[in-house]
Length: 106
Image 1 (tube, rainbow, N blue to C red):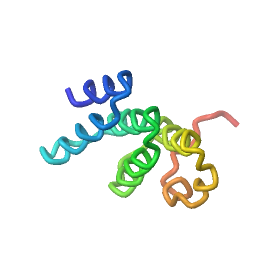
Image 2: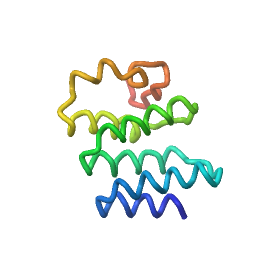
Image 3: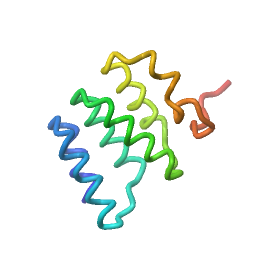
Image 4: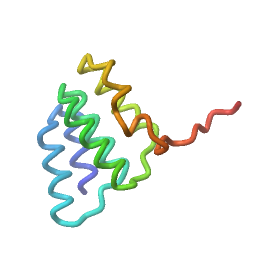
């Protein structure tokens, strides 16, 4: 249910509502999955709220959530949309060992 609501927020450009839903999940002690978190980050990124997208990314990383390439892509895209490329090097979670392993053949 929550994931569908957050996905609708992405399509509707409603990043404040996406953040509210994620907060409500925490209050109700409903686990936020990587998919739901990535969708909320995408809603923030599309709405120009890159700081919120990166806060979600950081919280998810600190919670040991298994983030996927979609989450990393949303975080990087948030930097891009915010015109904050120089900040990427300062983002601890983008430079940590939490990176997903590449599944690309060598």
